[in-house]
Image (cartoon, rainbow, N blue to C red):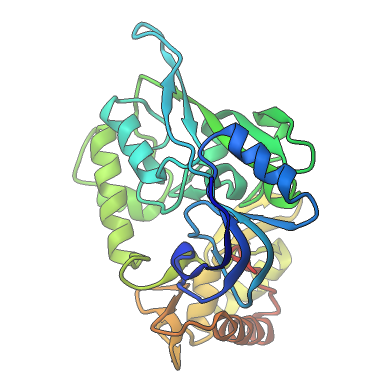
Length: 333
C-alpha cells in the first residue's frame, strides 16, 4: 500500500472543491487498514467513501483514508423469506440496490439512485421517498480507529435517527461492511406523494417498476453530481412545534407538515428556501438548483468557502423570515 503526501482531494468530493491531504492512502483489506492506523497514530483521521456528502474549505492536516473494500455475500437459501446480504463498504450504493432489485429482494428500492457507497449509507442513515436505510440494516461491521478492533453493531446499537447515527456522531469508527435484512415478498405501500403520483397509472407496481419510478423522479428533480457538482440535499428538514406550524400555515397554507412526536412536526427545508426567494438563485459560481432549492450546486468554483458563504446567506434569510434554523446535513471540512 502506498502513502501519498500532499494529495489533491478535488476528485474525491462531489462538489469538486480543491484541498490537499497531508497524507493519503487507500487500503484494500483489513490488515492494510490496521497497518496505516498503526503507522500514523497521532495524525488526525478522515475517512472518505464516495465523497458525495462532504466538501473541503481548506487543506486537511492529517491522514485521509479511502478504503477499497469490495464484495457481496448472501447468507440465506432460496427457500428463506428473509434474505441477509453482507455488502463491503466500498461497493457503489446504487449498483447494490440494482443488484437487490434484480433478484427481487425487497426493502431498498425506494433508495435507488442515491450517490455514494454502501459504507456511507448507515453513517448518514440515508433516506428518500418514505424509506430510511436503518429499516433494512441488521448489523454494521466497523473498525475502531484508535484500537484497530473490529466491532459488530446490531441495528439498535447504531443509534439511528433522522440523517444520523453513532458513526456520524463519534468520529472513531471505519465501516468495513453492512449486513442487510431484506424480504422476498414485495407489495408496494404508498408513502410519498411524488412517487405515488408517478405510479398512479399502475395498479399493482412491481419492485422493478418502483425502482424505475424513483429513478425518473430523482432525475427530474435532482442534478447528477457528475454533470453539475453538488452533494445532494444540503439541509435537513427542520422540526418545529405544532404551534409554530399553525402560525406559519396562516400565511402559508400549503406548508408541508409531517407528524413527529410530543408537540413537534417536521416541515420541508426546500419549501422554506423556495418561499425565501432562493429557488434557482445564483451568486457567482454557487447557486440552488432550479428544480430543487434544497440542492446547492457548484457552477465552477474550486473554493469551498464560497459554498459556505452561500449556505450562511440562505440560513440567515430563512431564519429572519420564518424563525427557523436550518441545519446542513453535508459535512464541511
